[in-house]
View (cartoon, rainbow, N blue to C red):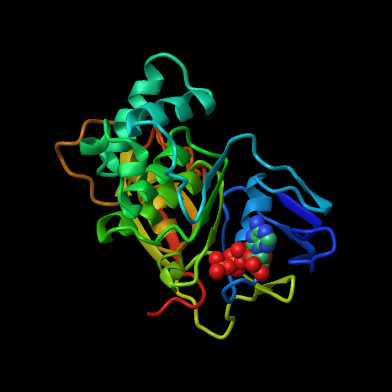
Length: 287
Ligand SMILES: Nc1ncnc2c1ncn2[C@@H]1O[C@H](COP(=O)(O)OP(=O)(O)OP(=O)(O)O)[C@@H](O)[C@H]1O
């Protein structure tokens, strides 16, 4: 997705909140939008999500499926949690049994099972925020936009946010997230975009730290999950390769043909006995 020379103001004669923002976010990338209160972070996110049209400029290559989680979930709607999420699943294009499956699985995962028949206006702010997260994830989005997602959430759900982000990234989606609480230390691999005076600047990763490469061996069946988790923790995945020379548990059944080293990608881990994941810590990570 790309923002091309994006200008935004809220009134015809009002001040420009964003002035000529030009930035690109690729598949599998996460960016954190930083800046002081009122500087325009939410404005930028709304433009990226497609809920606000820029006065000038344009957004190109936005993925078809966007998950948008506003800073405050609009809970003043006369639906129960289940009715609302069912409707949102249909809006997201799910049909038949997939609708109930998605609603059940996301309400379970976000601790909303006990609230399925509760009306939205009766929810606490934190519970309503969880409904906001659930509706964005009902169908895995190609772009997930989260405005201050940690705000008002309980500790367990705060822990879950990086996991959801990792799942979108693992499927080659992109994620944009704003943060003024410093919670995005949980996303050390994220690009950092700073908004000030209507402009966006990207903070360069610190280049003065030594980098080490760590090789990790995992069962082939767990490669995709391991890669997603390491990425979410901020590590850069350099390579995934098959390696039969590493001690294999004797009870393990013989596998199919083993691909040569270098033949695997994190997205295509199948068909090997075991695999090495070579990771490198993200720049700036404490060691
Ligand atoms: N709907 C609106 N109508 C008029 N002005 C608005 C509107 N929404 C935002 N603004 C103004 O645009 C500017 C940027 O607001 P925005 O919410 O994007 O900032 P922010 O960086 O996300 O702030 P915060 O960290 O407090 O959420 C602010 O001056 C704000 O008052």
